[in-house]
Image 1 (cartoon, one colour):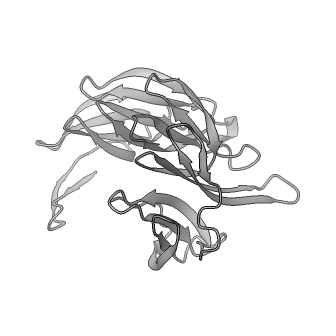
Image 2: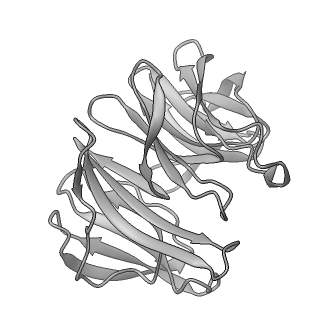
Length: 258
């Protein structure tokens, strides 16, 4: 993992971990998930790994909520066995670097976000076929339940934005679903299941994010559903879901941070 000066982008340090995948910050430290089944804690003053904790096979993405770090355990290299050792999110105490609970969720969990109440949402990505991606909600007491369909999520205050881009290649004929929705996290009600309707939309959406400063919604996209080598795009919408701009991006844009 490389550490850069955020003003000059000059390299300050290189921190060695084993197959890093996800990253977040909590309690004055940086946490990195590694495909070897461990999460590393990094001291931000010495740029050194100070602790490791075993969490499960192929930990994926992470989110920090208060003094805890949540990491999705995908078992992503075990697709032939239906990701049998995944189906969970590990909750880590950021101060002790110990796993406090393993929270059961759906198959092949990946993207995570947290709302303003401290609840965590995780996308269980399914098997990219007959088991569709689904969003699970983890309460602050670690209770988890199915929330809605969806392949990526973003939180802004009390609103959860859900992208659902799903294709069942096992079906005959092939079934494809593409929707955008917004939910009120307070009661779980659907604010709209027609977000971005009537607006220019991405050709092959890959992620959804929200700028917390102005509420603008951003959606990344490949050039097309079958093109993984051409530069993609970034679409921007205002807080009401109205199209603002389309930006050129690199090949397979996968995330954005504000």
